[in-house]
Length: 539
DNA sequence: TATCCTTTGAAGTCT
DNA sequence: AGACTTCAAAGGATA
Image (cartoon, rainbow, N blue to C red; front, side):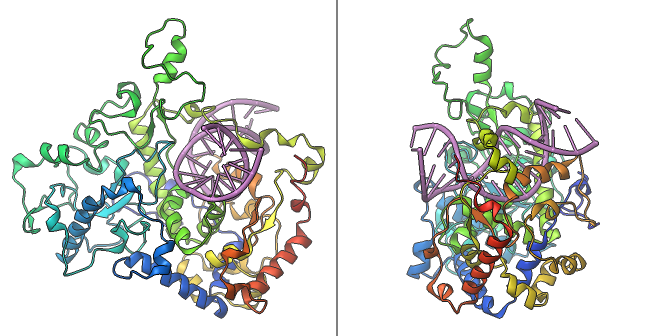
């Protein structure tokens, strides 16, 4: 079993996390990635990605137009981000943080001022910007020092393009810093973090005066007042190793003492049941409904994100940038497939990150339970749809009209295979490279014929990567089965068809391998999954 | 305006 | 213990 030694020296028992395993679909994807016909697409896609990553100079219209424009509320952070970008650049120039990829702790996640966890605040892809920097680097120079014509601002740090957490630039574990306090325990600053900070004028790393640097929260009070510190909500916790963990102590609306909301706290005033009772604040202490009052006063602490959610947040922008698709459902399908196409090592990073986020979450909110959020949402959709006897007989998860989604996905999510290609092509080098630790499994799964269900086994625990903890495997399997029953590893389905217009004309050509693959897949779908296609009709 | 859709995973409840 | 349900993010689509 691969060691999840991410984070190096992490004492959190990284190995207890489980890794989900790719199903046959993954293999298909990887195989198909090397199909020559797809290579061009890959190149195109990678160019797109690179362009967004490099951001910068290229003002090329087409790509630029497709990039999500920076949201107004984000603009206000541009300077700040540029500063961090510059800081990063300087640090890199100085040879800092050139260590192993897992030296991911000198990163800071910069949330938007608006609470990214607020249900009403749209979380932009750049909501979390992970910046590689030294921990104490919180001194804020003038913006003039931010610009450095000598080198372009790293694209992934720019606000002008969707922030893509590129693995080459940012380790997936970096978001952990937003929650983790283990590395900032008072009195024991991370050893890899130099006490130096950048001189605001020269940009040269300097050793701060003790008076201006708190060991744990080096941001000077003045700076705090000037800009919201990205970790502002976390700082109080970092400052005190015995921070009051109970939500009860949090000021209303999930604000910390700093006034900066914790990402996981959603004010009931903002996210609450549409009960219509919004006058809680003014009518405090009404004895008539004490219980309800208490509940309303309780900040809504969101669940910590799981590995896939973290992955989604990181990769969504990238997928969106690559595709013309905009429906999140479609994007999520692609992301789901990409998730399965990740190597175990890559997944392990996210599992590790998720695990640490959970741990930190539990530290921050010891009394919190997922149960607290039960019923907070509007009633979940199709819970009561099983009434239809026909559907229940045919499909455990009634779905709306299923439409093959392969073409779009194929375009956007290169990995999606055409079955023909998969069968014709050998495992690709890239696949082997992508998942060096699972070559054998790859082979065994490649040969798998079309299957109606991706997950049952795809999500089963990998023989070499046993899932930890409770019956998460069965749990996840069962949970996913509801939605994946009708899905095929290579044929994703959407209740709404993805318009073919999302595909470039070249791919729509009948001679296009993608077109062929789509037809092939569609045909296979019709043959193998007739039931899934009828699931919806009755409503 | 609120909910649905869609994904995976964690954690809850239910049988 | 296992099956099942809910929620976490996201944002366009839909009612």
